[in-house]
Image (cartoon, rainbow, N blue to C red; front, top):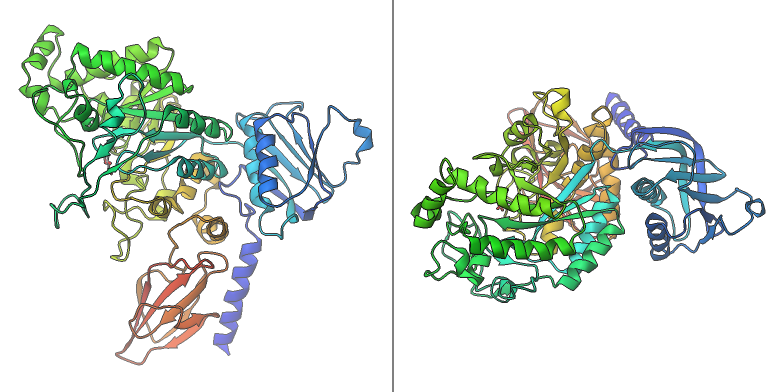
Length: 616
Ligand code: TNX
């Protein structure tokens, strides 16, 4: 009897909990949500009243509705007599309103009669993203949207996702799919890592060999670059690049989603692909170079000659002409000084320029590039190594080796973007410690770790903290050869990034995020054709518990997913027992029961196995 009561209580409390989600399922959690009662019924008769029909956000909403099977009419309120429209059953997208909203902010009011969304520019776009999230889950052309007043704006102005297309190349369609995902989660900066040792991926008209030679490698390392079978290669040529035409198309696509693109042209390290195309860029042009075939840090780097600067500035000129944004990323990370130390030219340059050593030479290099970029009216971003040997005067620093570089740069009055690998922002790191995870670079960055990151170090003064302009997650693709693998590695962690970047610290709550909201979003991503890592069911994570009697309650990590279990040590399959209601186990003395679970989603994606040992 006692047991039954307990089950009932548990079952009841989870369903009540779900309805009580203070954030109405929205990711990232808004600044404030005041719930009303009931729903607005969005149906084919609902009219969308707009005061700026050409607005990009309005256009986005129109295209979204059409694609999702909605048939609603848009009406330009400037062209009709407003009196002819009862406001009943309308959605007003209003850019022309009195008063102010915080930058990128919006206000969304939903009553049973009408919806009013107020926002300008990006604010209108983000309001629409929230509205779209609330519209989900109904039959085509109809949606029930819960009555509420939502006020919202972001914590940080820079909310970034990076993608390395050099180690593996991803085509235009995938980049668009990536941008779609970013837009849905209110991320606004796409850091496009276009060049590296293993490939040059952007057409430069003046130097065609960069792509003719530099975009192709003869073969690729199989498995991990270090340890194991370290000399196994796939014997298969690999390559790809974007034409300038395609780059323009992607920039335009991103602009329609209020996403700025930051192109990264790596220098002076991570440049082997460029050197293979133009050996005169190196300190030893007599050597033969080939585009990188394995991972790690190449010893061959750009030589700081006038010829190199001429070529780099020519390249940057073409890049700046394509990309309209304020920033250009010039890399600056992991530049071994071995080739410079061996070079008479470098030694002489160090003494001529009165530089301390090779670190000083790296600063000289970045400083010259910065000067050029600034003269074109733009700013550079560099990885935190650009601090070594002295920071270029106007550079923004991306802190990846922990937070120390970011802290030092903010103390010097420079803007900083936090992206520490040690804090769960390297999405190439493994999502659990299980051997069932796919090949990755290693590390350990589970969803909870990513979620708990706070980009503002407490050690900074309030004034210095203002220099932390935002946060970014990096997606290095050494071990991601397919779009599906990239999606697996970024989801659901990207949802956590979105909340770190947008939601105020006070409004973050991991339990509400992971157990009430993520499960809804993963179900939608499932039906939208994204891959993702299916979390282990909540309550089924690996543990050992002791006692003689256990009540086991699981919460599905994806709405609509099924949980299967075994007690025989085998990894469960859909042919095993399905978990439907909480389970009761009695464990005999000196025995143990080994409960393994997996989750299978509606589209057939599977979690790794969770493992609970009950010991008596
Ligand atoms: C370091 S993060 C790198 C990349 C690698 C990555 C692997 C950074 C600025 N440089 O070149 O892909 O580690 O995690």
